[in-house]
Length: 153
Image (cartoon, rainbow, N blue to C red; front, side):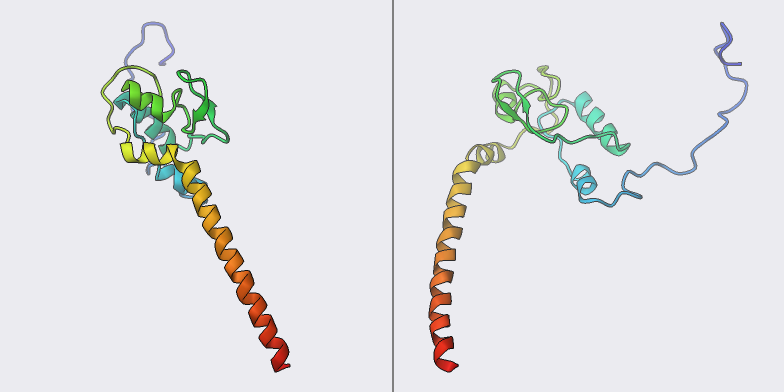
């Protein structure tokens, strides 16, 4: 028996063996599972990347519902699960965003993506303004169409 003291060798093979590998999207075809499977783990070291990939592979990864606090800048800017640092702080210090150690980063942060996320509020405001302008134009067309509709009736 394997629980006996000093018995380190097994005399038989493993009793139950899996015949096929686990698939995390076999029965769960939700949008959330698809986004989790498509997630790119950038800004983390190799051991942390392997941990995150394992948790996704076996359906243990839980995405954040709201941003967490960054340990460097103390702002609610951490948008990735299991990370302790926000993207700008990790990029600036060249450390792993998950463990905070100065290790080799496997996939570095894309600078263009970081800048676009910082300026997202500004671009969002401009797109909303354009939408409002287009709504006003639509309203003007609707009024002129309404006037024509009365003459035809």
